[in-house]
Length: 305
Image (tube, rainbow, N blue to C red; front, side, top):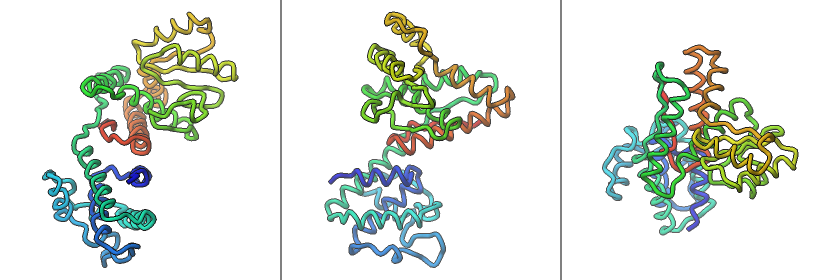
C-alpha cells in the first residue's frame, strides 16, 4: 500500500507529539473495526472535545501487541488539544482511501514505527548558559549533530540542522520565503538556491564543491546575488574555490555560527533577556519547520532560555 497519504496527513496535522500519536493509532484501530464509510459522529462523547474510546489503557494495549511497554501518553490522547478535529479529518481520509483489513494493518504498523521513532528521539540541545557566547552555543549544537551523524552512517544531520536553522531565521525576517525539506534539490523545484529572497540566492552546505560554484555562477548570470552559508571550517574552502574560478568578488560566504550570532545580538538589542527571547523564537520556528518538512523528530532542538 502507498502510505504517502498517511504520511502527508501526519505532517499536515503535525501528528508528532505523544498525545497526537496515541490518538492516531487508536483511531486507526477503531476505524479498522468499523463499517466504511466511518461516521465520525459515532465517536463523539457527552464531554466536549473528547473522543469515545480513546484512553491510556487502550493505547498501551495496542502497543503491547508490538512489544512496546513504555507509556506513550498518560491520557492516551483523550484530552489532547485538537483530538476531536484530528478524529474527523482522519475519518475523512480513511473514507477516501477505503483500506482493506490488510491495508489497515499496514497503516497501523506505520503509526507504530512513528511511535518507536518518538521514543528513541532525543532532541539536540542549544545551551542557554549566560557565560557561553551565542557563537559557541551554535558551535556546540553543530557538534552534537556531527556526533549523531558519525554514529549513523549515511545520514546528513549537520546539513539538515544547518539548512533549517537558516530557514528559521529567514522565516522570522522574511515570512514569505519558501521552505523545503533538506533533501529536496534546488534544480527540480526551479529555485536558484536553497532559499530565494529578493534578488538573492542562498545556498546551505557543509561541503562546498565545484558543483555549488557552478550554481553560483549561474545565479550571477541570472542577475542573482549568491550567498553561501556553511560551517566555519569550510568557509576558506568556498572562498578558494570561488577564487580559482575567478568570481570571488561576486559572492558572499558566511559561517552559520556568525550568521546566527550577529542576528540574535542585533534583534536582541544586545541585552541578555532579549537575546534569550530571540533564541527562543528561532528555535520555535526551527522546530515548526522540522514538523512540517522532516520525518525525524530527533532533529528537534531543545532550548530552555
